[in-house]
Length: 305
Image (cartoon, rainbow, N blue to C red; front, side, top):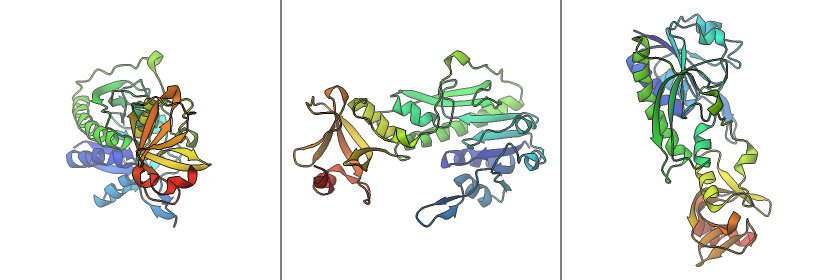
């Protein structure tokens, strides 16, 4: 049976790991170190670590995988599979297995190399994205392509829903790809470097909506892209208002971009670029839980108007 080391961290990676456990011999799992979360700063294991421990699989959590890889090489895997691991991996480890190392990446490479391809695809208003299985190389997400599958992005999709869709598509495509790879039935395809774009991890600055630069459609995509994490926000008198759900509203306003206004008593709108209007549907004021914008209009919003 094929001996596999799996490297991954978030919930996205769990269905992929579970499928590998069911079909192959997963001899080790590599994931990011436990993190302190919440107000109490409690140490929490990654979803991948929790899954591995539930299956009694040895877990490795190096702070720096480029320096702490010898124990993983010593497992003598036939193949390393990575899916949203979160660190760049050195070539000494990547080239150690018989069938090298392959990655499950949530974009149609070479578009959106990097750590936030799903966020970027939705924010840009793309109508499709997908999964690419490719060899791992020294350069980020630049290896030869072994398999591709496209997935539609619906207007109703958020980053969260696309994570779930792409995780399952990635799982299925990976299993097909591994079988073909071992049987020698795949001809790797080089990526076109001239078409490469990058989707780096989301910064704090990118969470803030700029109504001077974003139309209502841009804001709609921005909010979907950062739901459920890290969540887009606007500023009201210097305080962040997190925005989880919006709707483009067919209304040409005459306000300055960023102006928040209420119509029909409980519908909350914001003026956007080019006189376009976005309706807020679900928001979260400071110190509150997420709430319908109608509740916000009849309560906390008053102090900002």
